[in-house]
Amino acid sequence: MQVLKFGGTSVGSAERMQALVKLVANPHPKIVVLSAMSGTTNALVEIANALYNKEPGKANELIKKLEEKYLTEVAKLYKAEVSLNKGKQLINYHFDYLRSFTLDMFTSNEEKAILAQGELLSTALFHFYLEEIGVKSVLLPSLNFMRIDENEEPDLTYIENNLQLELAKNQEANLFITQGYICRNAFGEIDNLKRGGSDYTASLIGAAIRAEEVQIWTDIDGMHNNDPRVVNKTHPIHELSFDEAAELAYFGAKILHPTCILPAQKRNIPVRLLNTMQPQAKGTIITSSNHNTGIKAVAAKDGITAINIKSGRMLLAYGFLRSVFEVFERHKTPIDMITTSEVAVSLTIDNATNLPAIIKELEAFGNVEIDKDQAIICIVGDFSGEKKGYANKVFDALKEIPIRMISYGGSAHNISVLVNGDQKKDALIALNKGIFNYN
Ligand code: ASP
Ligand code: MG
Image (cartoon, rainbow, N blue to C red; front, side, top):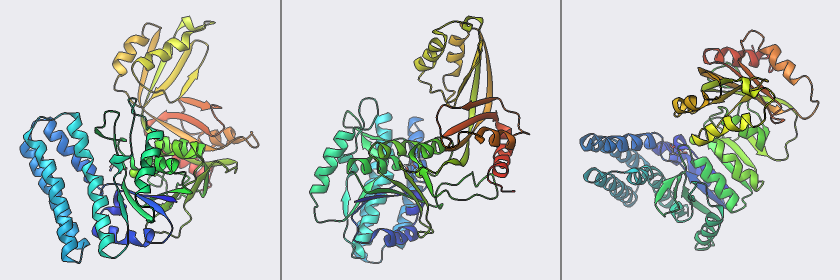
């Protein structure tokens, strides 16, 4: 069994849904995971915000606008009167449900129910379309098997057992359609895997059924060696290891959600990135058995805050770093990069929500300095081979760029450097030239 995930643009219009059929209607057994039609989840967030702000009138307008978009698309999607009526009824049902929230109290539980409507709509509309053209498929309700626990972590045993039950109800079927992103929480309420979470759904399902392969279909032919929005020339990387892909996904390669790697990696399920616009292209295959060494790609993450703590107490002391890390732990703020000297430590965070409180506590240790708007440039590959020359290559390429921090050796897959945010573009261009020989 394969798992194929299609993102919002791949189901973003009637034409795109119709084009999807070519990719899913073959006898190979598969579970197809769909996102909401593009723009929908953002629109649902806006609706929820209006309701939080006690603006039911505005919410109703936004609901109406979104509903019109769906009505236009279904009119193009279906040919038969019966299918069109089914589609319209479905839209009515979900939008009446959305409207019901404008009449009542509004809390985060209701918000999550609102956010779930996009995936419920896209999957059912696509399923009706397959039905109309005579392709047999089964709609799997992901709210019956996808679940997170009290710590908001996926409950893989629950997912595995309940997905098996759902699949067993339709033993002869070979095409299942299900919703990405949405799930239930430990209390059985509707919840989600956070924005962009459909990739995560696909990987979790892949792990749960021990799939042959998880395919993530998008609009680009795999992960590229550099950010195509910044540099002129890039190439797709055909093979990556799970570790390399995780670093790239986390440090800015938008094509894959970073959480998507772990479940597949745990059970050694290959993840393939493919392009709906160019289905024949090779894409990127991510496995545990890729041993190509060398630098494979660079990526950048902006909006980084660097924090420097300078303290005489650090000299020859033990336990100092622990006390510093505990501050971040108390404020639930992950640290990305860290470098130390004998009397100072610099680290970076990308979520600065609790920064004022963090600074206040850190000031008890010594002098604290903050640099906002930094960027992490991450160079990814397998540096375990020759073990020499990689750092030289990177710094030679970056010789004109002022560097604030360097991190090398944390793993054999990553060299990270911190630069001022306005140097990000130049750094990526310089690396494209120095490492990949693109001008
Ligand atoms: N529809 C959700 C979002 O826009 C999940 C996804 O597309 O992966 O965040
Ligand atoms: Mg996505």
